[in-house]
Image 1 (cartoon, one colour):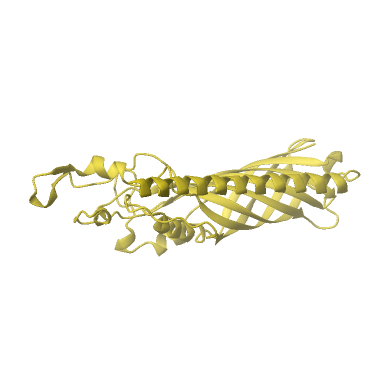
Image 2 (tube, one colour; image 1 turned 90 degrees about the horizontal axis):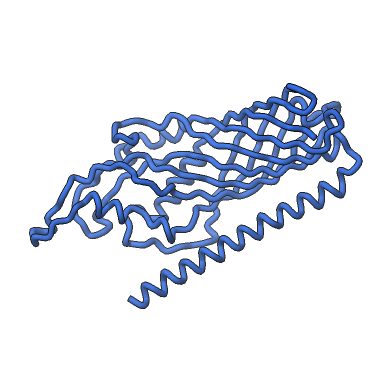
Length: 291
């Protein structure tokens, strides 16, 4: 028992260390970004004399390739009502700040959140219960990202107006959203004829995933985007475009799976990696304010 407490204590310490390191990285990125941009861009101006711009946009994509790659029975797909169905759309939001260095070149810092879904089948034998697999609705994943990037255009361009390219490198954290997922547990079960009745639904609901202790799933993020901004007024622009984001595994922080839960962190990692690398093109649209 004391050994279990020590293990859980070690996991919490590891999580605090991971959060602390991630926070330090974020602070360092902000510090370097504002230091460099302030030092270089004091005399440079863009559209209508603007030196800065803020962009807020929505993202939308269809996980077509992920659905095709998960068409086998071992990765059954169900909606929230447990009807066989594929996930049609995923999306998210982005907010970024840009500092104009030259009329056609800017340094930017982007933060965002994505909402996506993965599929899983549950096998209660993980807990020593001999029973067939049963369906569960799609699982919701939230991914938070931060991404320093550069934005550039042709020589005669005047950022943030017009057509531009964006390249960025950053990192993201994904985690399973805690909620009551729908599943078919088969009701009550007699434990090997010993006369002990188990309510599968409540038992599995409380042993689905270690939300409290499981580390977030970390990935390195590489971005290439094409953006078009059209002027609405002197300061406000409408922007649209598309982007490709490549996610690469970051297995620096290792956490041992807990056998007390049906969904294991290792399996969740692989499913999230598979989903994130299946997205080819994401459409984005929003507004930019130049000042």
